[in-house]
Amino acid sequence: MAIYNEREEHLINVLKEKISNQSAKVAVIGLGYVGLPLAVEQAKIGFSVMGVDKDLNKVEQIKKGKSYIGDVNEDVLRALVKSGKLSAYDHFDRLKEADIIIICVPTPLKSAREPDLSFVISATREVAGQLRTGQLISLESTTFPGTTREVILPILKSTNLVVGRDFFLVFSPERVDPGNKHFTTGDISKVVGGVTEMCREAACTFYSQSFKDVVPVSSPGAAEMTKIFENTYRSVNIAMVNEFMILCDRMGLDIWEVVDAAGTKPFGIQTFYPGPGVGGHCIPVDPFYLAWKAKDYNFCTRFIDLAGEINMQASEYVVQKLITLLNKHKKCLNGSRIFVLGVAYKKDIDDIRESPALKIIDSLHKNHAEVIYHDPYVSSIELFSGNERCMQSVSLTEKELAGADCVLIATDHTCVNYQWVADHAQLILDSRNATKNVQRGEEKIIKI
Image 1 (tube, rainbow, N blue to C red):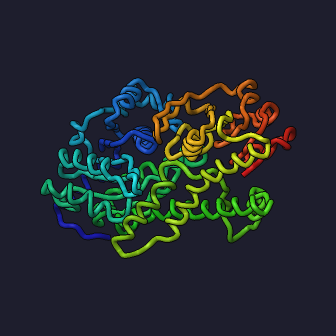
Image 2: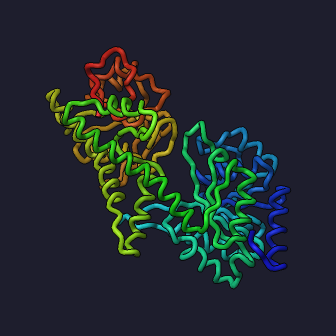
Image 3: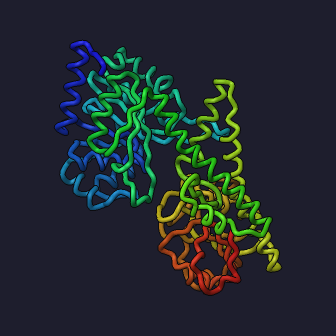
């Protein structure tokens, strides 16, 4: 147990008391796939929560009780807004009122695969402008080890307030899995790393109110590395099975049969499935944050770099597979009508961030194919490579299916009747094994 001086002990006890009786005010900066579910979760257990986002459209929707995130129940959101437990703003003027400030802004990659911390830095500067004694600041945006101490802390220290004495600073990575019905925000364990012991203690007290299991680690760097490790683990294993996918294709073997058979072993293996590439806010991005940071230590992350390359090649492999398939039917990709079924990065969600389907569609356009798509969750998409394009989802009809030279299943949404699709399509390239239960028309289905 840490030993604090009288002033420090009073400060942390006041905050812990506010947290325990839910009188603490919480501010969540960034109301996207991470921030909005977190804000709702905190408001549900009794905290007064203010959400902050520069996107006025998001703020206005929240004020109207409308959810733009699939994992956020609109009835629950509306009730919280009506009760005053959850409010939303497009400015930072009221941050000083908050006892806990949580930063959940994007951390994308620049064109050269370098970290883009501009959103984090901008949000931190806003916090610094309102920073006062007794506040807890938690960064949840995934980033490279060292960000909290090397980037965030210097900005907050410029206020002349002292971390661990005047305010508390931690890194606690988000672990959101959009569309997961089994594990919601509060069900997933929460890793917490504080700049000081007092920082960690304050954050553990706060997160234990809404998370079933809080896992304290020794430092923000350990927490930052934990998140990167989780996503790199998945990236590397997906890359391995994607490489097996290409090899099995050349050997005339069914990769889906092989993976399912291997998965029957009760120990020593975790099942990963192949696909058209990786998407989302974590796996295609986070490992490169570590690869970039590793250069500061004269270290080359060969596994990470290779896995990233293989997963990106998987999307182009799908295009090449499609070209080969059309050739066998005496058609060429140039001028062919391709119906892409599903564009979200995984099934049953509306999230298209880093979706491999978008990369595939872009490649098809470059090869002069005529492309249409249907996704029940995504009404429109924008493509920015080359000439900017905006595409609208078409209806899933017999006419559209029959009129396409090939239907490419890029995302396996469960609401789609794949037997019906197979009954009406001329040709199908299935990149997700969505047609595994199809009983008629198997002869026109090719799987990657």
